[in-house]
Length: 145
Image 1 (spheres, rainbow, N blue to C red):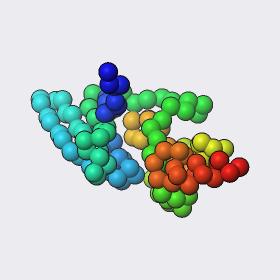
Image 2 (cartoon, one colour; image 1 turned 90 degrees about the vertical axis):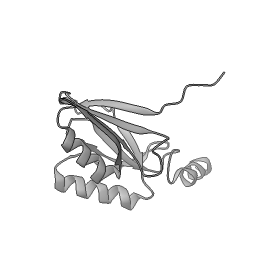
Image 3 (cartoon, rainbow, N blue to C red; image 1 turned 120 degrees about the horizontal axis):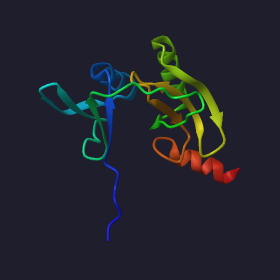
Image 4 (cartoon, rainbow, N blue to C red; image 1 turned 135 degrees about the horizontal axis):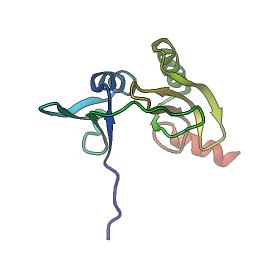
């Protein structure tokens, strides 16, 4: 018997175009599929090269989220360096969407910052977690500590 494998997350969003732009600009995702029928639009977005691995499905007709400062639900994206985390945070601060300035937490959390997309979802950008770029070095460092 095979275990289920996550393939996508689907989000209803209020402003589809603003969310598409956010995920393009900050997450490097591209549209891989779009269909429009009457007033309904559905957009699939993926990181280049991962179109058959994992996607975000964005659908219009949603409501803005009102997350509190202590609500840490988020989508996580790994980066290849602390400097990339700092760069994303600076860009987000200029754009007015930075919610967690860069900070370091003990393994397995690592170095991260947080942004808020136009619909209110929180997005974490990290380096040094045991997932994604930098995972091997972070795991070796934690094992030596």
